[in-house]
Image 1 (cartoon, rainbow, N blue to C red):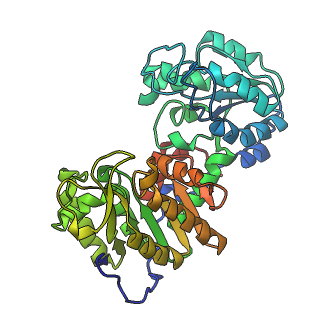
Image 2: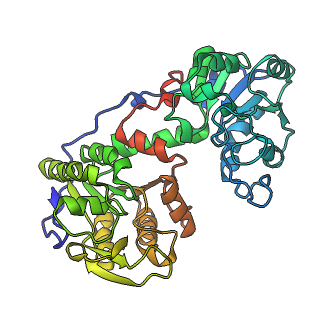
Image 3: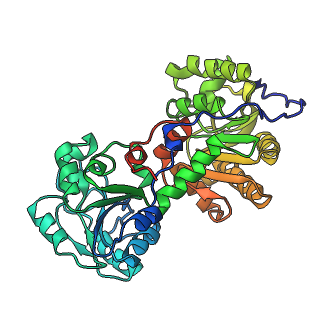
Length: 434
């Protein structure tokens, strides 16, 4: 049901135990890296491993890695393969060079990650300046037991993002086995994430990807109910598909962020100078009606924090959601909303959080997002399954120092959303069956 957000419902919460999720193709068990090692003697074998090496670089020199989180994330799978005696060929894109060869910077060569990878893996990391061709094939052919080779930025080829068959075949010539461990790009049918699997004897999920699938698939396929989704973010256009899908799966959906004003407008409320996507007002109205028909609690914030300008030093006020006027703009959820969300999260046993509740980059508009992060941590401590997905959500949870206080932090924003929507992720679908 759509819950009126100016007055809290006093009706008892009855988990929709009779509803069950529809299994997607991703529900099929896929081969993981441990399964691969049990089937094949990997000693001396070349294994192509798709990873995500998109790390931030220092603005001072465009070379120094300022956050090695994504590098550390690939270590468990890489070390496992090395311990099995495999030669690991690392493959990644870096930024969006759009088919151009760029020497340095966030869209450039992968040279900046070589030394950090050496330190993290404790072995030498060789690098080539291309990702396919005769020279690369020669380098791959010369690898001996336990070597690591890093290929060049795959997006130096424009065909990478188009799942170009020639690039996929070129990558396929480097190894007999493929390990996909880049969940953040698993929702893209690219040459290095999907097409390459057609040229391998076996393809498997790395530890990182395997964990993502199990947590996110488990959240929507077999949750410990009640299942609550907290969806935020600025643009409603990017979240409408996942909200529509979650209405079929959740018991409760809590909405926040800039997108709520499109829903308010659908209800006929004034929104002042708050952001709105007029093209999606009608759809927002339909979703509220759809939730009501399904018996799902779709809850909008009963109050918001207003600002007189989009700035850290703005003057602020708290108002009921139905009483926004003038040039005020909503930049965070209000204190009554936080209390309401606390109640809903407190009675849920599986909670998914995607998207901030406000402009959390500005301290005075970060209260709602930080509060949700703290509520997620509290829920985890009482035994609930808590999952954080989406770049901004992850940043907010880490900013609050609570990254280790939730069950799972997803490494993929778009991939997380598409998996929650029930979509087929090409990078997962391409893997071998277990």
